[in-house]
Amino acid sequence: MEEKYIDLLLQRCLNFDNSKILFINYDVVNKGFVDKVIKRAKELGVEEIVLDESDINVTRDKLLNESDEKIKNDPYFDKSNWDVYAKKHASFMMLDTEFPNALDDIDSDKIALASKIRRESRPVFRRMETTYEIPWVIAALPNEKWAEDIYGKDSYEKLESAIYKMCMVDTNNPIESWNNYVKELKKKSDYLNGLNIQKIHYTNDLGTDLTLTMPKDNIWTSVADDIDHNMLVNMPSYEVFTSPDYRYSEGIVYSSKPLMYGGGIVDEFYLKFKDGKVIDYDAKRGKDILKGIIESDSNSCYLGECALVDYDSPISNTGKVFKTTLIDENAACHLALGDGFSTTIPNGEKMKKEELLEKGINQSFNHVDFMIGTKDLKIEAETNNGNVIIFENGNFVM
Image (cartoon, rainbow, N blue to C red; front, side, top):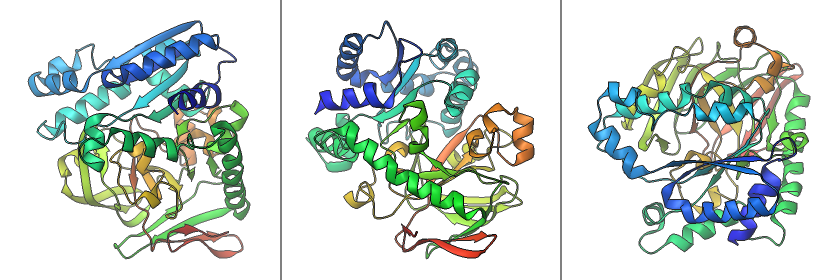
């Protein structure tokens, strides 16, 4: 099924119409897979392939032994080359693999610093990524350590099989399967947009009691709505999402799954909001990491995304927490601290940062998703025509 996965990523998720350049970001543990991607990409007519290779062992060594000043000036963490190829309209394939606990003994401030350097060194890429001016996809790949953490020893093939299943690679025609599925997602986003939602209110037995206000004429979207660009940017993707007005979040929200961030883990945490801003928080694990996320810049303490995912979904039904945001965010409703999406308001992609802020779309160098969906989650929407329940018992209601 490896070949089918590669074809799904290259021929359906990405779009080489405007550029024959492929930029691949990956960890060295997955080099064998990348070699096969390169071979297939050349067969499909890709003319230039650029590799951005990292190594979790090198990352760990540098964070453990280098001073903050040296980390700031270390080319290893500098991603400005991404901007060079974004300007060339390259297609970006980001292959995500996890190494749980690999950075547990690293100072959380250094993890946050390295993440900040990576983000801030590629502003052009970030802008063009969020407005879909360039083709990009984030996709999951297994490795032995990750598989052992999830399933136990000698379980690489089990994790690989799980990834293929959640990405529909186990179907006869994965591309056709995703084309059919995005039509279902489009029905959900169309329904939500038809309600003209002003506010949404989350509640569950964990203690979540949170109200979000929507910007005027906000747009709910999904991977389906990128179909005009001939892209699928997340693999897998089961969410419908928008950006709330960052200035008006009120209440408290509790996490429902661990958050992996920069190689560290934050778990069993809550965030309390007033006038849009996080005013209180705590975590049973990784509080320092959470602090680093919230304080990474002046607006990372505000929300930039709210996303709806059925609790009864292909990933959630595995009963596993995969300890990677890419997968876990598609198993549960989630929120994101930090940057909002310009495409979730009319003509937002043409607006400058100041204009987006005036419209209520948060602007930050950071964007960190965290999961809040539970089996008993209820979401009630306030509309011009009264209140409507859009989520009940953890699942979408239409």
